[in-house]
Length: 153
Image (cartoon, rainbow, N blue to C red):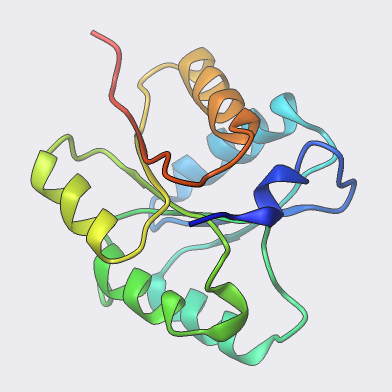
């Protein structure tokens, strides 16, 4: 599977990242780290899978360059949200990266089967988050390259 949107992220001045995460403290950390990686990327933040699916179904003009999706959320969990997002035609090739505290290999394989482009374990340190986002954004293509960034020991 090839994701052309991602190969353009480093050169697009108006690329948008979507973060779907119910942890409000995570929002500021993520957006600050993303801005440090590339100040030209904007970030839309939503605190639930339900809100994300509604917004993306209703706002045809919003097509993120990539989506970071938390697994453990109330109402609609990340797996359910992933399935819903993959059913939206204009998002079929948008990389959806699971962004979770879970290190369970079953979660990694299940989300891959459901259509995620990758899996990132939320780093504990801000500098590790910046490093991880740099790696994800710098990935030149996504064809046959499923990644997993575990926490550093």
